[in-house]
Length: 197
Length: 91
Image 1 (cartoon, chains in turn brown, blue):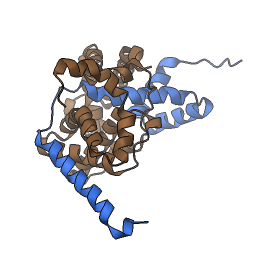
Image 2 (tube, each protein chain N blue to C red):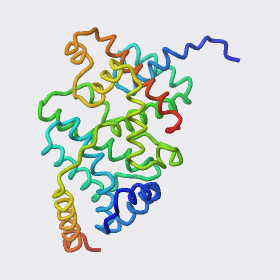
Image 3 (cartoon, helix red, strand yellow):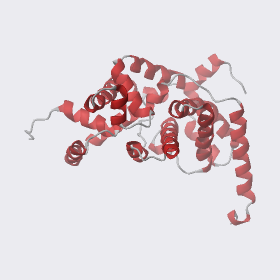
Image 4 (cartoon, rainbow over the protein chains, first blue to last red):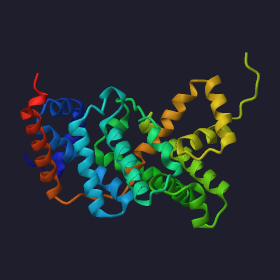
């Protein structure tokens, strides 16, 4: 069934409550449930993959891979966090792995793949918001950061570069880059605190 | 009562650096000690990790091509049918 965009938005908050139920149905073999989860999260997974890999074909391949992992495995545990967090953490980790294997170079970001998925409380305004509202929250918060902090944070998160590589690319001292990305993260947290905690 | 002065700003910076993966060896040692002394700091770490995780919601919209959905469902369906019929997956 196809909903109009307004109708979809109106229903999205209710729909988001059903991720766990849909995940259960999908695990029981219902392919329609995978389709609905794909409709909800494909764009988020794809845009993150594209941001890191920069190539649309690679980003689509990775999007398919991520949803097949969800379909196949026992990787996602709803009691440990939201499906959105799981999918984005998985996407980022896989995307960076791909960059790394293509450059056959071990990078500092390796520790990323070991970081546990954050465990958001399911009742935060962020978790209850539609995907469009979540994007709005984050965009507004990012827009309030000083440009240099936003840039340092984005480079640290999306690009497979070491901090020293970033520093030399931008022609600024390593300590400054570290400090900007840390301050950026702390500021972003302050801006999002009301909806995330 | 603990009287040791706490300076929250450098500690916050260390926590952010930890989440971003850009601590120096000395900073990592220092934070490790603080985390041992005060396990409640792990809650702060998880809040910062979550902030980083949700950052991707801010990426400008982009969608995969429409054929990807049908391609994915076809592969998934195929895998499901293979799982059912493979003899070594039975009881």
